[in-house]
Each structure stands twice: as structure tokens, then as C-alpha cells.
Image 1 (cartoon, one colour):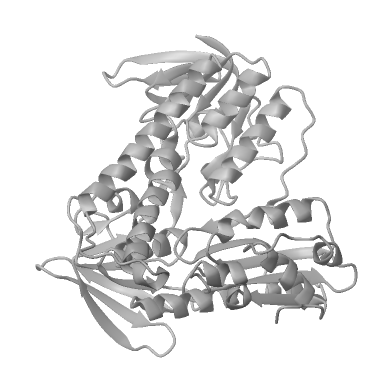
Image 2 (cartoon, rainbow, N blue to C red):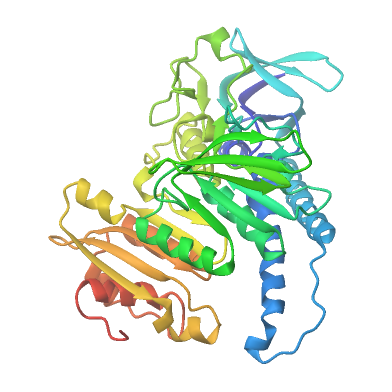
Length: 465
């Protein structure tokens, strides 16, 4: 009942924290009310990528003739796709169970709540409450789909991402409200397997509004070319679910024009909100700010011994951010001297087709920060590997400081760019300059040489344009 560390929540923040703590010799327990791995492994990162892979394979088969292959009678088996996705998620969750056992971490099933002591009171499935004590407690309870006032989620006609990957039948018409990563990934998946998809985004920039505007513009063009309807700078006013068809009533935020879309299902993809209710923060007096737990650079709250990581913080709601915060937090608890996380060097990835990956400043963001910039772009239409692979859409855009050559940011859209962005993350971490990228020999033919070519373009030395 007594531990050096208790972690509440077993997502990519929680289970990583528990494993690192065990590696450092801390007697550790982890509390989980559902399945080990949290939203990421069970309902987010992993199963969505399984669905997207199914859509990609289906798309390849439908365009097999482009590669000199004759394929006939290709059909999408929606139920089988969902089943495969759930199987992948279940396998990953079992993998986390193995890691807990391997690292001798005590797994406590139930709902954890902070109580005076501080302690953690855990309520199991039968309602029995057991209290556990620890020198240190990490809150890693994650987040859930944000519910908009005019989009009350009922799980049938208005759904969130969990339901979107476990529907019994494929909808014929889908309206996605919100064009961030979740929205465009599900929009791509359902459109590719034959659903009529409309994506509505409140922000003027349109699709993926947090990305560099050049990326948003390119994705909007490609999605529209595929046949998706994209509404940027539109507000959903009301949703009428009373009839057989759902009526999504919208208003253009620029000119006031109104429009109604008819559909079978509405997916609310307006982001995530932290799970901080009913976990005892008020009991211990843990400070919150704008709905998030407030911490310092080591993830300590204002209450000694209480820490928080992941989506309960006002940092990027990304699995790899939660994992990095977990390791930094635990190493500090164990008496080590970790380096604080540089949140301006966190990569973001969106796994629709084409993929999107970015890190650092956007072009405008760099200018707003006072930099005089050099910008280079290299289109995949000029890439031999992309052309040979039949994926010439997109480009790489890089941004450097003109004075010192500092690598300020990179923004990519294209096939497999989520596998390419780590080069830029490492380069920025090592304070690599633009000309060092240009002079680093990249293998040919590869997609990644587009980074070198884009850097060369910034300095007026590009070869293949």
C-alpha cells in the first residue's frame, strides 16, 4: 500500500513515467480505470493509424493500374477494417501489460482520486475503496473529446473520435466539425472508403489551422481535388437531429452567407479537453489555470509531492509530449538533473494522405519573433523518389535565420513526411545551420533529400529546380 511513486493514468505519459521510475529504482504503482495504454493506444494514435493504413491500401488498389497492375472488384469491408483496428489496439495494450510486469510495476485497476495525506483513494469496479500512499504522485489522467455547446454528443447522430472508429455501419454522408489533425484524418479515412465527406472549420485558414498557411492551402487543394467538400471560416450554428436526415446549419464568418448540409452522422472533432474533474485537486488545493493543472518546468504543482504531465497541462496535447514530460518529471523526482523540454522543438504530425509534419516556427511566426528569414521550398514533383512512387503531391518548406543560419522551422506535406521530420528536430537540437544541412550529403533517390534541396533553395543553390 506504500510506494515511492503512484501514477494516476496509464497513457503514453503515465506508463512511460512508471517504467522510467522503475528503471531508476523507485517502487512504483500505476492506476488505470480502463485499459492500459490510455486513449493513445486504445482509441487514439494507434488504432486510427490502423484505419488510415486500411484506407491507404484500398486507395492503392483502386489506382493499381497507375503502377501497371490490373486489379478488379475491389471493395472496402468496413467491419473488417474496424475489427483490424481494434485488434491492433488490443495487441498494443497487452504489450503495455507485459512492460508493467517486466519492470515490476504494481498495476491497480480502478478510478484514482487524490485525498488528504496526500494519498490516492482507488474505487474498483465493485465500488470498494482502497487508499494507497506514496512519497510522490503524478496525475496523468489525459484528455477527452471537447464538446461544443451546439454539438451535444449523443453517440449516435453526433459522435466523437472513439465512436468514429467503432461504428457498426459505414455512414453514407459524414460532416466533420473541426479540421485539426483528428478531423482531417477521419475525413480522409471515411472519404477514401466511399463516404461523402464535408469538413467544416471555424478558423479562416481552413484545414489544419495550426500549420503554416502554405500547408493548409495545399491540403485544401488536394482534399478538394479528391472530392471532399471543405468549408473554411464557417461556423456551425445549429444541428437538427430530429428527422431521418441530420441538418447542419452553418454561417460564413466573412460574408454572413448561410448553408445547410444534410448528412447521416456528424463527427465533432473540435479538439480535446483535460480530465481534471473529480480527481481531488480541490481537496488538496492544487492550483489550476484556465482549466489546466498549473506546474513548473519540472511538472511540480503547488502542492509538495504532487506532479502532473500530459493532456492535463496547457502544453501540446500529443503522445510524445506526454512521454517526454514523464521522463523529465520522473528523473527530477529521482534526484537527477534533466534538461527542461524545449516546447518550440516539438514535432507535430498529421497522418492523412498526404501526410503533414512540422516543427518550430512558421514563416510568419519567425517574422513576428523578430527574425529576418530565408525560406526555401522544394516540391515533390521534382523528387525522383516521389515520382517513382506515384506520390508527387506536396513539398518541403524550411525557414532559416538570415543572420546566423539558425534552423527556425520546417513544414512538410507529402508521402511519409512524418518519418522525415525527426531529421529537423535533431538538427535544431544540435543547433545545425542552414548551410550545414545543404552540405550534408543525403542519399538519392529518397524523399528526405527534399530537405537538403529545400535548404539549398533558401540559399539560392538548389540543383533540381
